[in-house]
Image 1 (cartoon, rainbow, N blue to C red):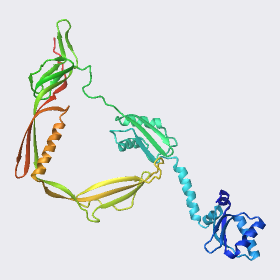
Image 2 (cartoon, rainbow, N blue to C red):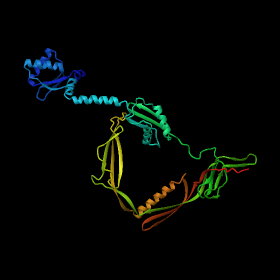
Image 3 (spheres, rainbow, N blue to C red):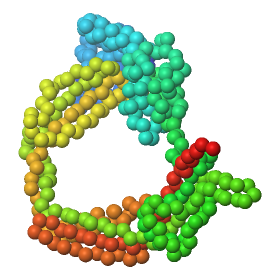
Image 4 (tube, helix red, strand yellow):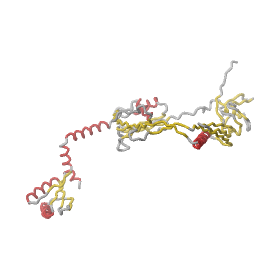
Length: 399
């Protein structure tokens, strides 16, 4: 089917088997052009003519006594005729087109990129507080003004850029990098012990070491001094830095109850309730009345799905679904083997959580199974970094 047939319209005409030859002879004599020649199951044929020639062929066949019938038609004239009988549809299409043109000048979607620790929802709140959100007109919008307002409002952001692509606003951010604490090299500081131990080795970066291998220290004892005493220059100070590894003893006491409470979700059909709402720009329309938890213990799961067809084209329509999953709290029991396995798991996690890591030398474990709990006591001998930097407080005395 050619494009001209769709523009001018076309008709599919058919005749029975006994009238095929007269019809084709008529087309040859009159010079009628046809396409889409098809053989019908009853032996007849079907031919496609343009809208104008189809009327001529029909009139000539009527004069020649050739019975011919219309089996189909299409093209732009047929579409316009159908729309003419449905004025409401035409008006709706026109109104929809006008709405589409008008809404193309406002923000349909805001997409956040570049954030790591600051959530996209928090950034959207900051933008909304500065007057930029879904539904904001692009006309008169100044990105530089909004960007400066957001940076002044939210100190977690170091840089922000708002760019428009169609109806989508792409917001690129860079989070502020806060300087680590106690890293001011101009501040005088000592290195002290965070826990008791016996010194094994010192890895000095700066300062004056005041302990040696084999020395026993307690929590808070001085390990590396930030003060230098010189007969030539007098007292000088610096920020002492070092890693001091010591043999330490840590104790872990873990108790695992044999009975505990656990959530059991109701799996019966109809036990879970659902709330559905549609968000169009900033308006929310609920399609189901709020059910809540009705005084029953339940977990809530929320999801929001955009109704856009293409991922790169924003659409200000989304469906929000809230599920309420009821549950009951049931008393459960553990076997001694399960309690022991859980206790050893918590012990491994506790050892792994020691800051800076440890070199394990010895581990002594004792267990006790009571009527209501399983108890695990562990003594760990290890080598770990016990150094911590502490600022030096200078006290001025009157002369």
